[in-house]
Amino acid sequence: MSRLNFKNSASDKEFKSWIKNTCGFVPKNLSLYVQALSHSSVTTKKGNYQTSNERLEFLGDAVLGAIIAEHLFKKYPYKDEGFLTQLRSKIVNGQNLKNLALKFGFNKFLKTSLNKEEKTKSSAYGDAFEAFIGAVYLDKGYNATKKFVLEKIIKFHIDLDELVNTNEDYKSQLQIWCQKNKVSLEYKLVSEKRVGANKIYAVQVYVDNKAGVIFENHSKKNAEQRAAQLTLEDIENGKIRIK
Image 1: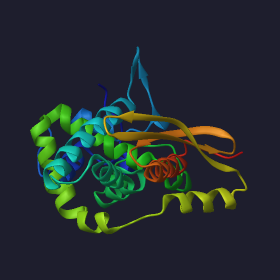
Image 2: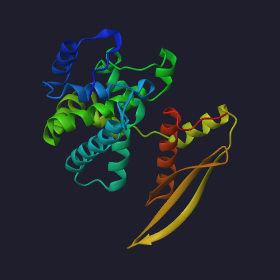
Image 3: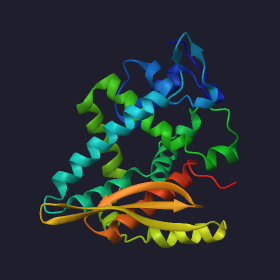
């Protein structure tokens, strides 16, 4: 893959040094990390090959989710699926990933044509962070990626106890946003089924009369809260826009 120039003309040597100092390992295939920090706004095409970070983002999202899920599963052996899902979502939500990217210094190396305001509003930094995880996985393997996530991210930048004790009312937050933007908000029960001794409720959010996120849970109330949370993340990442 051809080299892409970094923001501020950072050299390969400087980039490799940053990865070593920040992440604790020396990269084997530097081009993977270059691609991870290449936003789609500066995509170049070579044949049918795209050089933006979107494919790596897809991979990194799955790898990061799996590592976090395993860690929480082992750390909280007596907690149910709903607790684990909600806590994982708090860790990997768009704003948190953006904050992590900035703490790690991604702003120095992210290649994008977005201006400062556009970058602030977009999911570029969070997407790049997931793409970086994908690059680590392809370059170093699962165990090295797991070590990086647990020892460099969870250990120093994620306070699990604080996240557990944070009881956020996402429905209220979404209601406030809808009122501010003068759009309607509705939660619809789209299905109700029995699985063993439990009922599973599927709730769908409608913002401005447009069908949105669906979430299933044993509790209708929790399903509404999680659907609201995911909708807020979509708003934050620019996936939901009001004309």
